[in-house]
Length: 261
Length: 261
Image (cartoon, rainbow over all chains, first blue to last red; front, side, top):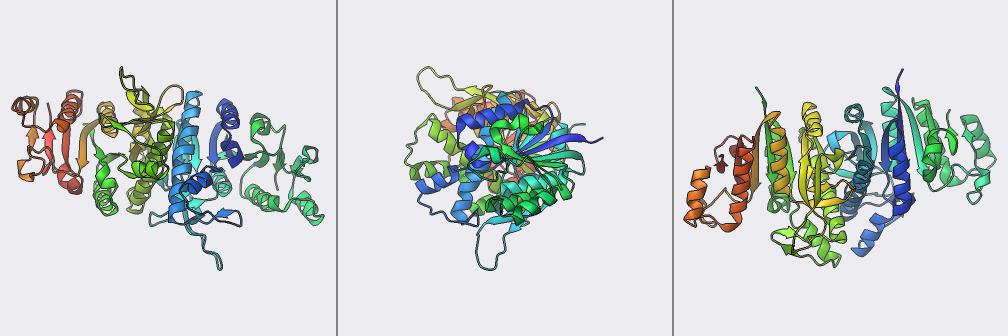
């Protein structure tokens, strides 16, 4: 039987709030199962860019990443946020190592090609090399992954953390029973974003199509669910979307939205 | 017989110059032996602090590290510089992983205690945990180390890269035949810093005492040599100080100053 592995993405709003982040990390540290944490960047990169007078532009939810912005995202994500999380986990007796997708070439990507928009140094993932993840997990380390990757030429690329979490989960599902958790500031998939009572506890392909046809799902959530369904079709056992402050109950299946094809 | 391991520190002036850094990394990548690269920070952290209007103060060669300066050094050292070096090495088919001393608690430190000066978040090393270094080296990865450590409470600390290189070399000399190389912008220990012809090719304790008594050694070089002699007394086979742009000939013993007790 394969061992359980949790790949947990934590969203920006949690990272921006020290108290919430510490609460989340305490729960993460207390999980006995093997685990990988993928973090986004939050508003820290935007704030730093503002202070440095480097204008930022978001298109289709991605940060247009010129050379100066790549420097900022690499510094903030792979430097400050990654090492702050690692040090906190270590101090909680949860041994952790922080890496980016560039380290040991564990995530290979290419610069995004788009007919109309030049996203700059934004990466789309080609391949996850599972070896280094397996090595660390065997050593009972949890792995903290910053959303920076590289291409074949040594060019660093700013890469979507949701996608990184998904691709790692898919790649490692050959070796582990993988559960992918998207944790953020909402209780899960809500039919009315302002009303927690409208949480959808379970989504299958059938339920998703029905909700979509009825126009009941918030547009921004559609690609997330499509990705989740695709992941469960590609070997990931289960995808759970829910509140980062309820991590333990997300893991035990007692809160959030559970998605499987 | 133990395998050879090179622990190579590269200084700030090389890191600040993209062309020199690439030349150095190409040589580093071409070394067949197992290897660890410890990098300093160069002027990038100072420049970023200037842009952000955070005044910097150097005392006894150390950066007084307040909370904002710690953020900057963590971003620049563990983020930008570390990942830029890793990506370049990977693209040269020299598989590399970048870590800081906080990762996997591989270097434990404490906040510097000083009777007169408050250095802020500056770390002095207590212990190197060799396990994670051994694991990576077994996997044929070279390791790129950023000079950030942590204490038991999860506090990140800005830590001297020379000392990190030395402590790693000492700790790993139980398992490897270790050579510690301090590479920078000079040809080695020079009796006249402006004249390369005054290079001292070999230093032993005896030669060092003699040169010191005769007042022939540049004051800034004395602690470096004392540290080197102490390292060779503690298991490190050889310490070489020399030009980062001559890395291959440093390794083969054909340039630089070779120090052993």
